[in-house]
Amino acid sequence: MGRARSIHNPPVAGALTISGLLTIEKVRGALAGVLSGGSAMSLNVAGVWLLGLSAPVSTLLFGYLAGGIVGYVVDIMIAKRDFAMTPGGTPTPLAYDAWVERAGWMIRSFAHRHFFRFIVTIVIETLTGLAMLDAAIRAMDRYDLLREWKLRNILAAIVIGSANFVLFGSVLRYDWAYKEVEQPLLNVVVLMWMTITMLVFAVAAGASQPQPQPHASAPPLAPDSTFDTAKDAVGGSAAATAATL
Image (cartoon, rainbow, N blue to C red; front, top):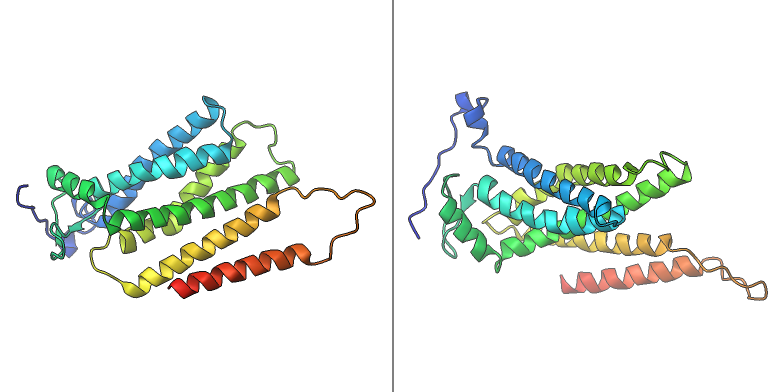
């Protein structure tokens, strides 16, 4: 593979020019998010309208999973700035038109920590987004908001997915998943974040399931039995996760 070409930081005086802004990693990351987000939204709408999927299922398959893979490819090819081209090498800026070098690094990364960390960010985004979408749909149903409008749920999924990416998805990717320098404390924080997100999602999903109605002759349930069971499950899982960390 040819020698990697470097780029230089833009001068302060040119930082507000178009060319200066386009050398800033997170600005390019925002553009990459627009491209991958637009693709994910198109697939999401197609899943609902052409395949007949529900908004949450289509959002999971196309908005987060397929859209996430597209997002990773676009992030690496047009947004990520610093690369360690050899294991343990020093991260150096790589020209944004060095397509061959970027593609080679991206292919190798599928077996390395950058991609696995990216999957962690997708898990956090997906579970948070699905929980928020479910809550939004239930709230709109409860207050009979736009119930007959066919686009209601898919637009809610698009708005919530976009908000998740802007609020923390992009930050996690560029400040943690794609970084070449190890940050042990941040690793622990993000893994704890993912664990808590999974626990909250599991509890919320269990609470949203319809409860079977007891027969008239059946004895009533203990007042706090369901809460105690969920609490014990959360406590046991959290303790096991803490032990592994």
